[in-house]
Image 1 (cartoon, rainbow, N blue to C red):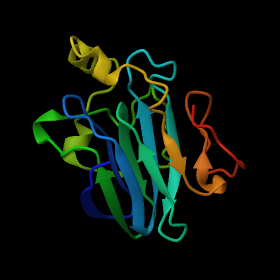
Image 2: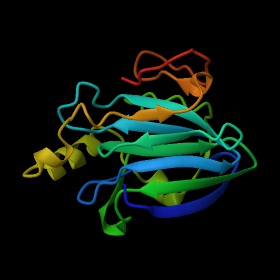
Image 3: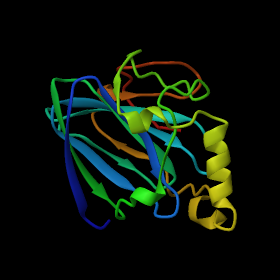
Length: 185
């Protein structure tokens, strides 16, 4: 993976996302180098059997864990401590003109963030809820199906202690939870 690095600092209660790029997709390797954050990925791969499902992991500087978010997933996080510093390694450059997003509180995704009123940027607050975001994705895929079509080799690879991983999706809200082991989808 190319080493495009970004370090970003946030304060407790900040929620970012859910972000993705369609024409310049990015895989991301994320970790927290100070503090803790709940990291969330949503499968937006057209044709995927897990399309629209999500998974989360607790990233912690203390645990020194990280998460790989493959191409075809929207990404977001919630900061859990007073100060959180993220370190990203991305597979492609950030392209502002290609930035898209899904509302963090989309009722059809049922993501369990554990908060009801996080600090959300003005830009992130304007992201659409489904089905509008689905229309954006399908429209962008026309003529470009192979780039994002479900590929079982591109599954999320959660790296962390088993106790920090929460199984998620539409079956219920379980955050945080100790479970022993976890296959995301």
